[in-house]
Image (cartoon, rainbow, N blue to C red):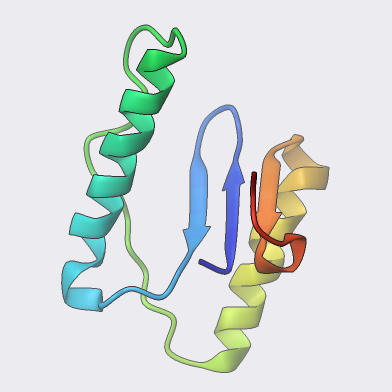
Length: 89
């Protein structure tokens, strides 16, 4: 995982996944996050039914995606984590 942002309305994740299984892995992560949120008191729906997976095919696009995700902190007040921030507790 290179970068993650979580805002009030959506989530972006930049991670290296096998494209053929990427949507399945995102589904597993969403399921885990839902159980964690529920255990902390979340009530109701958390996610849309289907995720959009976009392959990153070159370094220039990878960098644009990384900075796009980072900008959400300033633009939307989103929680943002990148590999530069180190390991989460």
